[in-house]
Length: 137
Image (cartoon, rainbow, N blue to C red):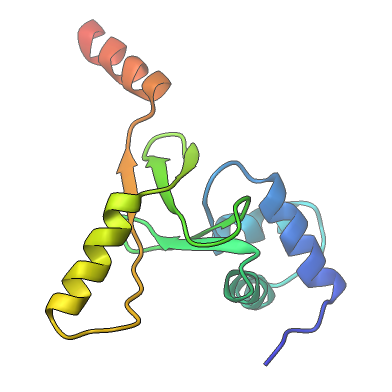
């Protein structure tokens, strides 16, 4: 079922576009609440779910299990490198991963295989910051 294009959904889309990296629905809701939009948390969840389903937003699960969202800047299937510290996200192609996923599925008798691969680590500035903090301790 298609979602109606309401002003609330458009405002959630704008807030998501303004966010840096992946954000949770709660974080996005807090931003919208601080702006006195009157948009409720359930509306934010519905809007984010619809944006992800339509391909207008990327959705992933953090290492802690929380659903995170980001305005999608690339069409089609892709993967992400995500900084655990600052949230910097880089969209990447991974042809080797694609080939491996298809081979592995076929090996086990599966077809129409889909997958999600997101790599979490530290970006260079955050790694340098951490090394500097550990060196100072």
